[in-house]
Image (cartoon, rainbow, N blue to C red; front, side):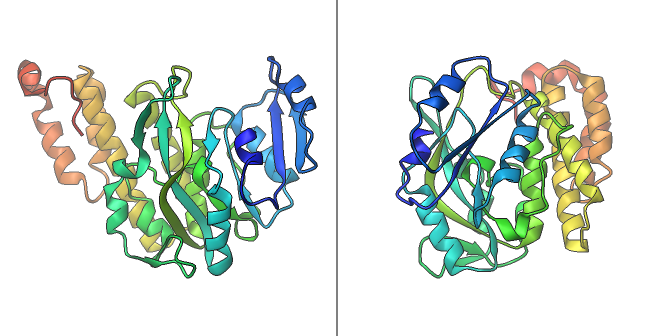
Length: 302
């Protein structure tokens, strides 16, 4: 909350949804003395319901999200609003982020994990503050293995995303489902500076690669019901096939060969990954004896 109230852009409302907390959140909120703060307490129904409650209360031209354990840099909103004001066709502006541990050690930056982002055609924003992706945002961003536009880093144009809500029956990867639908609502822009800090600890939702990929695959398959054009469907198929292929690889290196074979078979249904998946599926039965020799020490290759 302090990182929001410290923004150099002063014209905002801070909506705090207390999702049935059992700690001292209520007393902390009671001490806040700022007319921009609005609060709502709900029964504990999960992050999607909490975000939707905040969306229902929001009155601003733009919307941004921040989870309870993450931080914004002071210039985050000002720099994003400057781009959005100068680019009326942009529905989404996101920034890089840095991860940090409880000991405040710098761990890594998200854009370093998404080198493909730099190859996507883009132009300087009109205010010179960032880059605007020149092509279709969904076709450009949806196929990427790593998500460059995290909810915590994104500023959304409310008029473009007014009827979007988080899926309350989805407990993990709900943010991926939401943000990929935002890609369909207009152009996307980004700022290469890390203006958000995301805390990494043992209470984070994902602990293993398989735990991450299964819900990702579920929401990718949910997106097939969206009104997608041919370019969008191709992008979604590419991303979904890659997710199945990644899950197969992780299952194989973890020794779950039957699960790996099933995931390779699913990956083979998607163009762009069919040959790779079929090759791995064909050789899976003969690889167990060689697995220890093939596996790089300390690595789970993709």
